[in-house]
Image (cartoon, rainbow, N blue to C red; front, side, top):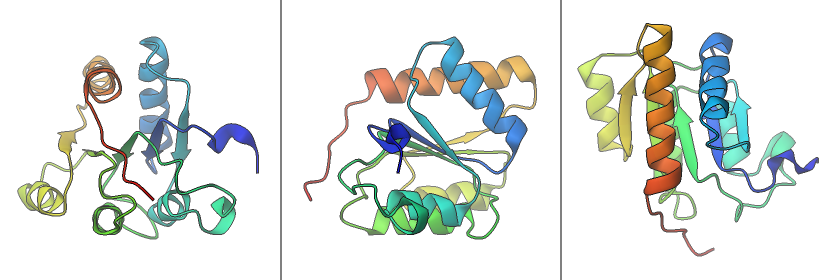
Length: 151
């Protein structure tokens, strides 16, 4: 396994390549981090977080500082990914921000009930999207204090 998975700061879980590229560009533009790992479906996200499958060589002690999670994902939906992360002792304190196009109240209510740390609806306009991603990155990566679970 290559070192790209070491010291991961952000896990981006996004199946839409355009939204993923915009997110990556926003972080790069604002010099927030160069340690972002992008996965394209919920199954791959769970494998990454829990060190399974192609990520079996990762260490569970190397959790992301932040997970940006879309809800509408192939294979395993975002709410199921969130449920798995927040119900496991080793990962439950990892901040998870829902970054989705869904504006459905039931999605927001269920996300918070499952332990999401924030819920952000993706703005449709390019500049608004870039600004929203930059602001959330600045808060979660630079200002927010986190507690790492002891393994």
